[in-house]
Length: 476
Image (cartoon, rainbow, N blue to C red; front, side, top):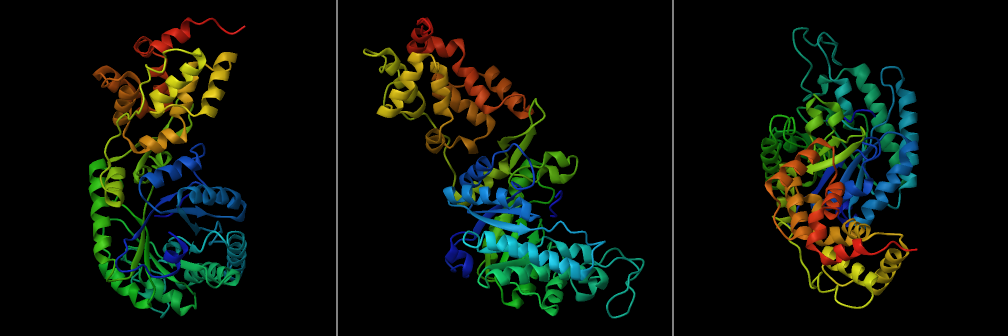
């Protein structure tokens, strides 16, 4: 799938995967060029929760390198490799082949040099051969005319590409390949096509002396074995850097989940036979701004517009769980776990320490550490924080997410968990329906729902420490 607008540890990336190893599973995203406002860290938290080890991201220009660097660093902290795909923003219609080659080579050298120590596999170009597919009435390289009554060629043979356009595609691909090789010949170059029938482009790449190390294929529903059989003849490992159910979830979210599961199972079946090493789902987040195109519905996680017109992540779709079940096995729903009694902590001694202790026990399930209790009790006493603030900051903490992994929950599961954690009861029907509807529509966030429960009269009446905190006079 073309990018518009615009793996694992080094040993795994530089050698063929052992026959006994699973595929390197990854997912596509656009943190460098798309959905501003969705934190890079949150995107990679989803990737980690999915049990995926690689995040394929597109970059078009050297000016975007600083953002790519942020993605790389966030990935390192989570044990996730970044697979950049260079999609140069060049005008193939207007620029000449020599000019295209120079620009592509310069871009590859700049990016390869900057990230030489962090990124050892680069994908060069994305579905560029599509530009060169021969059209009705155009002349083939052998001098014959492609029939005027046919549609665009299928791409299986070398004559299925129009020479004057292919030479431009080839110039870009060769420039990228030569540039990356100049930086470090041991950097792996992944190159290929959009899938479908486009096997002929590999033969043309070879004819043009374009060097690559990993053959790339894309697939959306069709069985790939015939293509794997052909492209494996080039003696290189195969990476499927895009796959999904055709049309994503546009027709049905359940259909997407089933389609992704079937594809992952099929790829595992073909792994050893065709030296298939890696596969990346397209894509992590919906691109809702492309609606009504099916490209709006390709994600594993919804992307919704909030009441300020900004893009925010919504809930994981059924395909998200289908992927995670394959990579990590079925995950149980979280339940509050405590080695303490939040109410018992409010027994005697310093009132503000007890309030902070209550928050730690309620949210994180353990007594607070000395430093944390000192910091929060001082803030409570000085009026710099309310007890509600302490509870919410702990809910937002990395420790809370590490303990309960709420990022991968559906909205209804998350709401149900909050009720049990904060109110010690299942969610009532009205609360469940109201909150889930607001989340789906983007008018509320999960954080806002937690804040609403913590600020509710029921929460105050259920916990004595909250009642006593509200009865205390303000400092000063």
